[in-house]
Amino acid sequence: MTYLALNAIFLGALAIVGLLLNKRLPWKAIGLATLALLALTAVFDNVIVGTGIVAYDESLITGIKIGYAPIEDFAYALAAPLLLSIAAELTKRQK
Amino acid sequence: MEGPALSFLYLGALLVSIAGLASLDFKHKLALGKSKAYRCLLIISVAFFLVWDLAGIALGIFFRGNAGHLTGITLSKELPIEEIFFLIVLSYSALLLLKAFGRLVRK
Image (tube, rainbow over all chains, first blue to last red; front, side):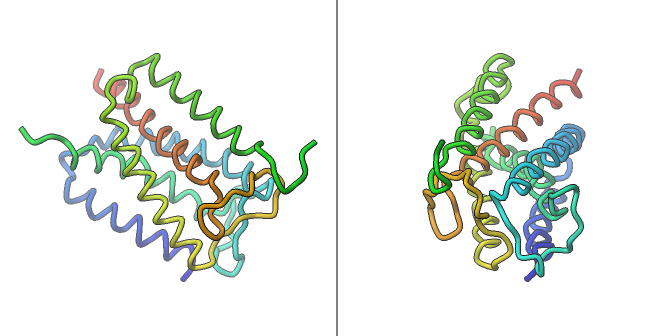
Protein backbone atom coordinates (compact mmCIF):
# COMPACT_ATOMS: atom_id res chain seq x y z
CA MET A 1 0.00 0.00 0.00
CA THR A 2 1.30 3.46 -0.85
CA TYR A 3 1.63 6.32 1.62
CA LEU A 4 -1.11 8.16 -0.29
CA ALA A 5 -3.53 5.21 0.09
CA LEU A 6 -2.73 4.91 3.81
CA ASN A 7 -3.42 8.63 4.27
CA ALA A 8 -6.68 8.33 2.34
CA ILE A 9 -7.94 5.80 4.91
CA PHE A 10 -7.20 8.01 7.93
CA LEU A 11 -8.23 11.30 6.29
CA GLY A 12 -11.30 9.64 4.78
CA ALA A 13 -12.43 8.34 8.17
CA LEU A 14 -11.99 11.80 9.70
CA ALA A 15 -13.80 13.46 6.79
CA ILE A 16 -16.79 11.13 7.19
CA VAL A 17 -17.07 11.78 10.93
CA GLY A 18 -16.51 15.49 10.24
CA LEU A 19 -19.40 15.57 7.79
CA LEU A 20 -21.65 13.69 10.20
CA LEU A 21 -20.94 16.27 12.90
CA ASN A 22 -20.88 19.09 10.31
CA LYS A 23 -22.93 21.75 12.09
CA ARG A 24 -21.30 21.08 15.47
CA LEU A 25 -17.72 21.75 14.31
CA PRO A 26 -15.93 25.15 14.28
CA TRP A 27 -15.02 25.04 10.56
CA LYS A 28 -13.52 28.53 10.33
CA ALA A 29 -11.10 27.89 13.18
CA ILE A 30 -10.33 24.41 11.79
CA GLY A 31 -9.52 25.90 8.37
CA LEU A 32 -7.26 28.63 9.76
CA ALA A 33 -5.49 26.27 12.17
CA THR A 34 -4.94 23.79 9.32
CA LEU A 35 -3.39 26.46 7.09
CA ALA A 36 -1.03 27.55 9.86
CA LEU A 37 -0.12 23.96 10.67
CA LEU A 38 0.60 23.19 6.99
CA ALA A 39 3.02 26.12 6.90
CA LEU A 40 4.72 24.96 10.11
CA THR A 41 4.92 21.41 8.74
CA ALA A 42 6.70 22.64 5.61
CA VAL A 43 9.47 24.02 7.83
CA PHE A 44 9.58 21.22 10.40
CA ASP A 45 9.38 18.35 7.92
CA ASN A 46 12.17 19.78 5.79
CA VAL A 47 14.39 19.76 8.87
CA ILE A 48 13.64 16.19 9.96
CA VAL A 49 13.75 14.73 6.44
CA GLY A 50 16.71 16.89 5.41
CA THR A 51 18.74 15.83 8.44
CA GLY A 52 17.86 12.17 7.85
CA ILE A 53 15.86 11.63 11.04
CA VAL A 54 13.16 9.95 9.01
CA ALA A 55 13.43 8.20 5.64
CA TYR A 56 10.96 6.80 3.11
CA ASP A 57 10.64 3.89 0.73
CA GLU A 58 10.79 5.92 -2.50
CA SER A 59 8.67 3.32 -4.31
CA LEU A 60 5.74 3.91 -1.93
CA ILE A 61 5.56 7.72 -2.18
CA THR A 62 4.48 9.85 -5.14
CA GLY A 63 7.82 11.64 -5.22
CA ILE A 64 6.11 15.04 -5.12
CA LYS A 65 8.03 17.03 -2.53
CA ILE A 66 8.08 20.48 -0.97
CA GLY A 67 11.82 20.84 -0.63
CA TYR A 68 12.78 17.57 1.09
CA ALA A 69 9.32 16.92 2.52
CA PRO A 70 7.15 14.34 0.74
CA ILE A 71 3.72 15.85 0.01
CA GLU A 72 2.14 12.88 1.83
CA ASP A 73 3.58 14.05 5.17
CA PHE A 74 1.27 17.05 5.07
CA ALA A 75 -1.68 14.72 5.72
CA TYR A 76 -0.87 14.80 9.45
CA ALA A 77 -1.22 18.58 9.52
CA LEU A 78 -4.41 18.31 7.49
CA ALA A 79 -5.84 15.84 10.01
CA ALA A 80 -4.83 17.29 13.38
CA PRO A 81 -7.20 20.29 13.79
CA LEU A 82 -10.18 18.30 12.45
CA LEU A 83 -9.35 15.32 14.68
CA LEU A 84 -9.08 17.51 17.79
CA SER A 85 -12.34 19.28 16.98
CA ILE A 86 -14.13 15.97 16.49
CA ALA A 87 -12.67 14.58 19.72
CA ALA A 88 -13.65 17.76 21.59
CA GLU A 89 -17.20 17.53 20.28
CA LEU A 90 -17.58 13.82 21.05
CA THR A 91 -16.15 14.08 24.56
CA LYS A 92 -18.20 17.13 25.44
CA ARG A 93 -20.34 16.45 28.49
CA GLN A 94 -23.97 16.04 27.56
CA LYS A 95 -26.26 18.44 29.36
CA MET B 1 30.94 15.75 20.76
CA GLU B 2 28.59 12.84 21.00
CA GLY B 3 28.86 9.92 18.66
CA PRO B 4 26.10 9.12 16.20
CA ALA B 5 24.80 6.32 18.43
CA LEU B 6 23.48 8.65 21.12
CA SER B 7 22.35 12.19 20.61
CA PHE B 8 19.77 14.21 22.44
CA LEU B 9 19.61 16.93 19.77
CA TYR B 10 16.21 16.05 18.29
CA LEU B 11 14.64 15.02 21.61
CA GLY B 12 15.95 18.20 23.22
CA ALA B 13 14.55 20.34 20.40
CA LEU B 14 11.15 18.67 20.79
CA LEU B 15 11.13 19.21 24.57
CA VAL B 16 12.04 22.88 24.11
CA SER B 17 9.17 23.16 21.60
CA ILE B 18 6.72 21.60 24.06
CA ALA B 19 7.89 24.00 26.78
CA GLY B 20 7.39 26.92 24.37
CA LEU B 21 3.89 25.76 23.49
CA ALA B 22 3.04 25.31 27.18
CA SER B 23 4.20 28.83 28.01
CA LEU B 24 1.98 30.26 25.24
CA ASP B 25 -0.88 28.06 26.45
CA PHE B 26 -0.63 29.23 30.06
CA LYS B 27 0.03 32.86 29.16
CA HIS B 28 -3.11 33.08 27.01
CA LYS B 29 -5.13 30.46 28.92
CA LEU B 30 -5.91 28.60 25.70
CA ALA B 31 -6.12 24.90 26.59
CA LEU B 32 -4.29 23.25 29.50
CA GLY B 33 -3.81 26.77 30.85
CA LYS B 34 -7.58 26.88 31.21
CA SER B 35 -8.56 23.32 32.07
CA LYS B 36 -6.75 20.06 32.74
CA ALA B 37 -9.48 18.29 30.76
CA TYR B 38 -7.61 19.18 27.55
CA ARG B 39 -5.06 16.49 28.45
CA CYS B 40 -7.65 13.97 27.34
CA LEU B 41 -7.86 15.54 23.85
CA LEU B 42 -4.09 15.52 23.47
CA ILE B 43 -3.93 11.85 24.48
CA ILE B 44 -6.64 10.94 21.93
CA SER B 45 -4.77 12.85 19.22
CA VAL B 46 -1.36 11.34 20.01
CA ALA B 47 -2.91 7.85 20.09
CA PHE B 48 -4.62 8.41 16.71
CA PHE B 49 -1.39 9.53 15.04
CA LEU B 50 0.54 6.71 16.71
CA VAL B 51 -1.78 4.18 15.04
CA TRP B 52 -1.20 6.00 11.72
CA ASP B 53 2.57 5.89 12.32
CA LEU B 54 2.56 2.21 13.23
CA ALA B 55 0.55 1.42 10.09
CA GLY B 56 3.07 3.34 7.96
CA ILE B 57 5.96 1.54 9.65
CA ALA B 58 4.29 -1.88 9.27
CA LEU B 59 3.77 -1.16 5.56
CA GLY B 60 7.40 -0.17 5.20
CA ILE B 61 6.52 3.34 3.99
CA PHE B 62 8.73 5.26 6.40
CA PHE B 63 11.39 4.32 8.91
CA ARG B 64 14.10 5.70 11.10
CA GLY B 65 16.78 7.49 9.12
CA ASN B 66 20.42 6.85 9.89
CA ALA B 67 20.92 10.32 11.28
CA GLY B 68 22.98 10.85 14.39
CA HIS B 69 20.39 13.06 16.03
CA LEU B 70 18.38 10.36 17.77
CA THR B 71 18.83 8.86 21.24
CA GLY B 72 18.56 5.38 19.78
CA ILE B 73 15.82 4.49 22.28
CA THR B 74 12.97 2.87 20.38
CA LEU B 75 9.47 1.90 21.49
CA SER B 76 9.17 -0.70 18.78
CA LYS B 77 10.99 -1.45 15.58
CA GLU B 78 11.54 1.79 13.63
CA LEU B 79 9.60 3.82 16.24
CA PRO B 80 12.02 6.09 18.09
CA ILE B 81 10.92 7.51 21.45
CA GLU B 82 11.25 10.94 19.83
CA GLU B 83 8.16 10.22 17.72
CA ILE B 84 5.90 10.39 20.80
CA PHE B 85 7.24 13.84 21.58
CA PHE B 86 6.88 14.89 17.94
CA LEU B 87 3.23 13.80 18.04
CA ILE B 88 2.76 15.83 21.22
CA VAL B 89 4.25 18.89 19.47
CA LEU B 90 1.97 18.34 16.47
CA SER B 91 -1.18 17.77 18.54
CA TYR B 92 -0.46 20.55 21.03
CA SER B 93 0.30 23.04 18.21
CA ALA B 94 -2.93 22.09 16.47
CA LEU B 95 -4.92 22.45 19.71
CA LEU B 96 -3.49 25.89 20.52
CA LEU B 97 -4.00 27.12 16.94
CA LEU B 98 -7.57 25.88 17.05
CA LYS B 99 -8.25 27.64 20.35
CA ALA B 100 -6.51 30.86 19.30
CA PHE B 101 -8.29 31.07 15.94
CA GLY B 102 -11.56 30.07 17.59
CA ARG B 103 -11.20 33.07 19.87
CA LEU B 104 -10.36 35.40 16.96
CA VAL B 105 -13.20 34.19 14.76
CA ARG B 106 -15.76 34.64 17.53
CA LYS B 107 -14.80 38.29 18.04
